[in-house]
Image (cartoon, rainbow, N blue to C red; front, side, top):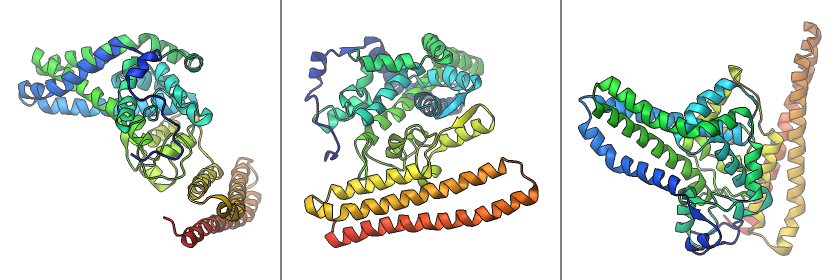
Length: 413
């Protein structure tokens, strides 16, 4: 694998060096992950073979439904709402459904612990201290070690204590998170083992049916775990986006899990956004945002955060300039830098002006003016909005045209 130009230097050459730095094996988690993976791989074929007649359909439906709900709970609740605070207000029904039921069914640790580690993971983009990133895909000198570490091995070890991890954990101290953290183990056992076992016995009338449905449940959260883990590994190691300045190296058009793998570089550049990506493909390939919008419509979450158009434009422009600067050096870059920075500033200023006019329109509608006066003011403002939109698009195109001219002039891809 060719390393990304922004990737930091490796810290370790082998896994053995981890133990010299204070890492120790978490035997409870290692045993749980190893045992459940073994059941998933070996027990699933046996469960389908010995299942009561016609019960395989129940097992398959349970696996798919369980996996979907677990993945949705992780991405929607633990990730966007809790780790990144994508909404200012989260009501108790959301905590109960996705935190006390869905996240234990995902079997990825308590919400409080999950969110704290994820906050540390993102802080690397700001501080550059990638030695703190628990899921880092840059610690080792070889790609296969980085993949194994970021995908699964990181969960099997106790990491050395750090003040950053302690602060991140203590910061997630709301009542729902504290209680979910305390009740996580009984919830994990009850929802993933006891519930499907009892339900399977009730539906089939046999202990075999109960064991088969419990196996289907284990298979569900194992598949869901790997779905989440690929975001930590794959999207931080391989991709096609150039000029990314964060630890995420791509904008794969991929749903796993339920949109987090898609536009992952966008997410790292503006993590608080309730959406996972910018543009049309960000809308089409992010089903989690639709669920958040539904919860918002029902009043269960309030105050959604999102990047403004100016912030989106700034991120996109920065990436393109970083890409160019990586190909042009010295006086050649200096000859173009002033022009490109000026065109970028013009684009951002026009975008800000367009958003300002749109905000004025919303303010007018909220003022409860007489109908005739309101229509008059809105019509006058409508023309301003249209002009601002055309100006914004023209300045964006001027910036992109300059980049194209630069690429053609100096003949690079």
